[in-house]
Length: 383
Image (cartoon, rainbow, N blue to C red; front, side):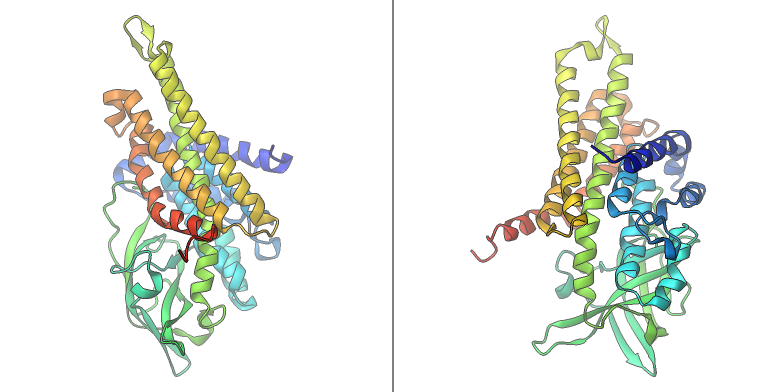
C-alpha cells in the first residue's frame, strides 16, 4: 500500500497525464515534436525536482516518488515519461550524487524546475554493453581545461532548446593494469567543439529528443569534472542501477496503459452480436495482461524499497527491469491484436505503445545484460 503522500502524488500525475498529456500527445508524436509545453507544466508541478533536496530547489522527495510519476505518465505516453526519466535519473541525479557544492548551486535549481534539462553522454556509436572496452572518447588536461574528442550516440535530451549540459563519460588516462581510467565531465550546451546532430528518425519515442554528439577539441574548465577523477565508470554503474528501477516503472506504465485501453475497447467493440469482451478468448488475454502489469509493478516496488532502505538492490533492479520490459512488450503486442486493424493505426494509443515498447528491452541495459547481472548476483559468474 502506498503512503498518503505517494498516493496523492500518483493521483495528481494520473490526472495530469489524462487531462494535459493525452489530448495533445498524439499530434506531437506524429509530427515528431518535442513536448515543450508539457515539460513546462511538469516543471511547474515539481516533477523534475521530486528526488532533489529542497535546498537545491527540489521537492525533497524520494526516488520512489519519481518512479510513481513515470508510471502514470507512461500509461498515456512514453515520450513524455522518458524525457522526465532521463532528465532526472541521468541528468540531475549524478550531479546531486557526485557534484561539488558549486556545481550543484549552478545547475540543480534550474534542473529541478524543468527550466533546463540534463543529459548523460555514455553510449558510443561503436560501443554497446561493453562500456569500458568500447569507449573511444578522450579528455586530456591542458592548461587548466579538459580537451574532449570523440562521439556519443543515442543521447536523450541532448539537443533541445532547454538542454543545459551533457555529462560526458571519457577516458582520462590509463590505470596501472592498462585498463582505461574513465571520468565524467560536465559539458554545457553550446560549448565550442560540441556538435549536436539532427534528431534521429526513431521507431518509437517520437516526441523525445535523441541525438548523436561529436566533440572536436571541445574545451571546458578542469572544475567541470564530476566527482573524482577515474570514478566515472563506478558512477555510471550506480546511476544505471537506480535508472533500471525507473525504466521498470515506465515499462509498467506502458503495460498498464495497454490494459486500460483494451478494457475500454472490448466493452465498445461488437462482433457476432456481442461486445468482444463477452468472449472468453478476449477475457483471458486481458486477464493475462493485467497479471503481467501487476507482477512487474510489485517487482519495481520491491527494488525501490530496498534501494530506499540502503540495502543491496542490483539484482532486484535487474529483475524489475527485465520483468517490466517483457510485460510492456507482451502487453503492447496483445493490445494491438485486440484492436485488430485499428491497433495498426497511429491515431490509437496502442499503436504508439507497440512502437515504444521494444526500446525498453534495450535501453539502460539490454534484457541479456539483466540476465547476466542476475546470474552473477547468484554466484554464477565464475562458473
